[in-house]
Structures are given as structure tokens and as C-alpha cells.
Image (cartoon, rainbow, N blue to C red; front, top):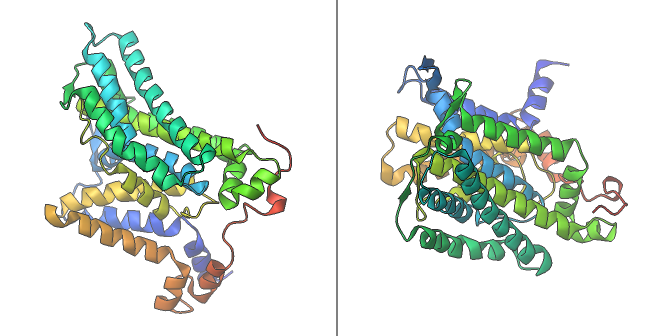
Length: 366
């Protein structure tokens, strides 16, 4: 095999362009911050720009992982930002009323209440989409709008502050020299990958996204699958809400998780998951979330004016999405560059085989 076919095979991998852009963004920071890649040990904790990117990107990674499974079923969840706000508001509100905010039992109960509220939001979204047949963008828009108001009602429109070291651990603490949130994200991603790639669950999700009606006719309970992924997405958003409120030791019902749903959708798309549903990539989503967070860091590092940072961010995302398109690469670089006509032909072929009869189990799955 020559170098050219190997290069083409590499560029055809769905993670090539997201990883390439991530590396490029990291390198862009070096001229402005010479010690950008340095990691230092201070008071037994690791500090550095790379550690900060993963730390501050942890909530986005969680939300994006949950969003991936929702999008894989052909849906979308616009309510995750409001769920982040509700979870943080409810947890901090309960904790602030405790006489001893450092009590582990009180912290666990506060976290449990917040996550329970997130699950309820997920059940509501899943019920509207799967049982009532409402379009996902409309069904989740309800909590996106109303949920933010509920969070402000919980906090009485104020920023609730807490002073609890156990609660601080979730999003701002360290364990084994690394931010504790990294371990939480790693655990959630590992469990998600194990359930979707080591069991039939991932195949069922892809089948529902490929053709929900065909999946139902062959015995797959597509409605139950949809409800499950919306609950999981809300649960991930709830954990992200705990991280954000923990990191700041405060709950802001108005700004917590604001527009995180858009960043999560962008991360999923950058990671190579189609918005039409079907096949998905958890690894691609994680890389996509890191691209978004690194882009945010780069914007501040190179000194992009605040009033234009969203435009700059949108331009980079558009470039990434275009570079992922084999048809675009074929037109711009020609037959021999970055995939060329061969990649374009592959793009014209059906990308999703999840709904093919041979890939769908014919037994009823509960």
C-alpha cells in the first residue's frame, strides 16, 4: 500500500478532521502563550492550559454525550441548558438552607434532588416526543423556555451562594492531582460507550434513528428507546449543572448553562454524528466538545474582541463542517486531495445502515 492510499484512508476516518482542527487550535495558542503546553504541579494539583480546557469543557462534554444519543434517534433536545440551571438552583437552594453545609449527607441529598428534577424533565420531554408525537424541537422548547423561569423561581431571582467543601469537590475539587470533574466525565463516557458498543443498545438506538416505524414493526419498542435517551440526556445535563454550580459555589438561574445546548449540538455535528439520526460517535462528540472549548480558550488568548467572538466562533465551526464534507473536499481540492472524488462517491452512498433489516433484531426488546 502506497503513501497516497494510506493518506486517503486516514482522511476518510470520521475523527480525522475534528482531531486535526483540535491540534491546529492548540498550536495557534503557542505564539500568544509560549508555555501553553506546560503542565505544572502546585500544592499537589496539576495546573496548565490543557488541564483548564478539559476542566471547563467537562460540563459541555457531558451535555454533548447525552445529546448524541438523542440526535441518534432523530431527535434534538433544546432544554438541556434549562435543566442545567434547574439542577444547580435546586441543589444550591436546598444546601443553603442547611445548618451544616459541609455535612456529606446533606450534600448527597441536595445532589439527589437536583438529579431527580433533571430526570423528571427528561421523562417529560420523552413523553411529549414518544407518546404524544410532538416534534422534538417543539417538545423540548417548552422546558427551554419555562425551565429557565422555574430555576429563577427556585432562587427567587437571586444568585444563591453556598459554602460547602464536599459540594465544591464535584466541579472545582481535585483528586489524584487532577480535577475531580475529569474523573466524572471519564466515568460517564466509559459507561455510555460500554452500553452502546458492548451491548445491543447502540444498535437499537441507531435503528430507531434510521427508521422508527420499521424498528417498531420488527419488535423494537422505539417509544421506550426514545424516552430512555431523553432521560439520559437530561441526567447528563443535571450532572453538568452540579459541576457548574459547584465550580462557582453558586446557582444562577438566569445564566447557568446559557446556550450550552447550541454548543452541545455543534460538538455532536463536529464529531460526525448526522442530525438526521442513525449512526453516532461518542468519541467524535468528545473531540467535538474539546474543539468548542479550545476554540473558546483560543478566542480569549489571541484577543478577539468580545463583540465579535461569536462571529469568529461560527466561522471556525463552518470551516470544520465543510472540511468534513467529502463533496466539498472533492470540489475544492480535486480528485487527488484530501479524499477527492472517491470521498464524494462515498458520501453519495447511504451513510446509515442501521435501519436495514439484517441489522435489526427481530426479537422484541423490553
